[in-house]
Image (cartoon, rainbow, N blue to C red; front, side, top):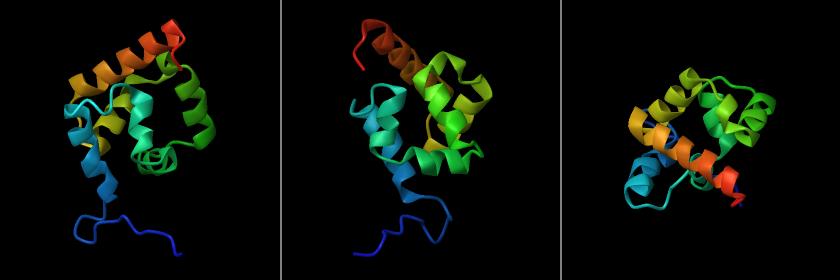
Length: 100
């Protein structure tokens, strides 16, 4: 089996990003990490110009994510700033509860 090509030839954007707003609205994405069930973190990190080692460090402690980077993730995923902040807050709360 060959690798799948998710790049939309018209936009040059990974078509899996289109799933993210729908999945947030449907409640299938409830926290930041859930986004990466639908699109690989490597794709998002590359698209916002972030090294994977930095990404992994910030995902382990989401409170370290700079707001600028969170807004970049929101933009590439087609989310509002409010939606992104809600996902981050839920991520932080889940870590506090030990539900990760």
